[in-house]
Image (tube, rainbow, N blue to C red):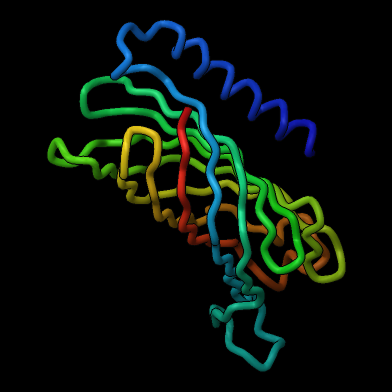
Length: 192
């Protein structure tokens, strides 16, 4: 699973790098960089069966934790107001390492230094244990956020992601629960 995720991340970044070689001016140049910050992670779990004390459909937070992340970034401009931003992050939320890859479309707001971002995110948790058995370790979801360019090299951002798939699929409690992670991250980015 980790090998497939790493292969996918390498292919996605290399395809963006080929686009970067076609840019003409310094303003539209693609830039690699580093990012770091703090994040919160929550697992929303829902009961699916009626033989528990709670009613079917009851939701509660089963897992919650915060931690730090560090990663590589790649930013590229497509046009005057649009760009692409990719990240490959290593996170540590509550004693558990997690790998996140996303590619987001960036839109510059009102010719300012603010950017809206949205796009897909893949979240790999190699040690996820669900109900005593391994569940679905790869999560796929949507991410949205806001970024502010402090200078041409530094920016700060806030992002929220919501997974769309069921992390309990394939585990021994698959018929009892349904659950997925959501993440909130605050970070700073440095571009070369």
